[in-house]
Amino acid sequence: MSAAQVPDATVARLPRYLHALEAVRDAGVVTSQELARAAGVSPEQLRKDLSFLGSYGRRGVGYDVAHLEQQIGVVLGVATRRTVVIVGIGYLGHALASYGGFAERGFDVAALVDVDPQVVGTRVAGLVVEPIEDLPQVVARTGASVGVIAVPAQHAQSVCDALVAAGVTGLLTFAPRALRVPDGVTVRAVDVASELQILAFHDARRHADLERAAVPPRAR
Amino acid sequence: MSAAQVPDATVARLPRYLHALEAVRDAGVVTSQELARAAGVSPEQLRKDLSFLGSYGRRGVGYDVAHLEQQIGVVLGVATRRTVVIVGIGYLGHALASYGGFAERGFDVAALVDVDPQVVGTRVAGLVVEPIEDLPQVVARTGASVGVIAVPAQHAQSVCDALVAAGVTGLLTFAPRALRVPDGVTVRAVDVASELQILAFHDARRHADLERAAVPPRAR
DNA sequence: TAGATTGTTAATCGATTAACAATC
DNA sequence: TAGATTGTTAATCGATTAACAATC
Image 1 (cartoon, chains in turn blue, brown, green, cyan):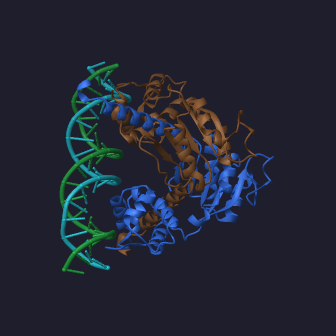
Image 2: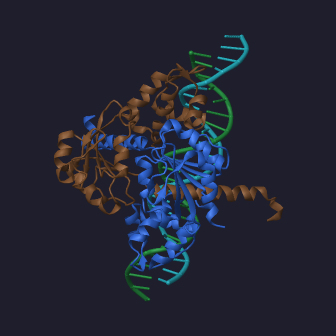
């Protein structure tokens, strides 16, 4: 099997390629140059990445859009539907529950869970919010394999524990906390404040570099 | 200056260290082992990362929490207040505007902007939402250097253009679209659907690996 | 055949891990 | 002095970039 040896860095870019392909679906064929431009990487990088999946292009021509889309989909397991439960239906949970882009990436949001009695029972994005106490039954009923944690940081670990106990094996958390999980559970974290800090650092460094470049070396 | 040569991979972890330090603020000193555990990295990785900033630890003892926190803060520019404008006040924009964790990381959310007349004029997290047409004045008035794009994907590029035209140099976007920006503008993208896909891939691969390990090699 | 573009190999670069000397 | 822990150097590993041969 080839998929087992696709490098992590490549895997992290595949969803972007998939997305860029959707945008050019009407064109029958794309070159690495066109697709790379749409995805925001270099053509060399794109070709190298795709070569890990197999040889799906035609030299002198390019890549068949539909075929490539399908092949990347196979590697990412888009056809393997995954069921998602979102815990924490505040503004962020609302945003996630309402986001329409998950289905075509292979994810079905099947349940929403919250701790607040005021929120439990309300209808959000076509689903009725269920109480956190029912998490085991909710996971069992929906067959959820992925849990999304959209609760305040101080409750992230206990929600994480509850999701894991209920049988979820993949976790996406938005809480700025390192989560402790047993072996066999995969965690991915999105921390918006950290993203802002990394962004600001790069921005500041860039400006410092530009300034330095503007001053003739002799002057320093 | 040393900060200019801090590796990207290290920079990306510094916010996590900063956050882990906050959790142990009452302890006067931490060892690399303790802090690494809290941040979810190896002690070697942590020490290596910190060594790029300088030699702030004491051999045989550990790191002074307050001092290290301050030094990382200096590198990340926490003291350099940055002003943020959020564009798109749907559920996601609401969540971002209401998030209380930005201030202590050096960011002040100074303005909220939306295109919808129904939303413009309403008060969110203590700020009155302003119309997108006023973006140039809003950026000028607040001195915003960072823009957060929380609008639907199809409007991301035009909002991006407007923010750049208004003078913003750093952009954090949540829209699953590669943004085109001029030189001198730094972009960072958070794509939740992609994160889910990457998570699911790692999760699936992990399970495949575990299964393979369970089967004696001879059997294959 | 000529032109275009992929896919692969080699070279470079950057990041992580491991080992241990320095030193509190 | 003995024990603990950092900071640095070296070794390994993985990712990116560049060059070009293969081939449509």
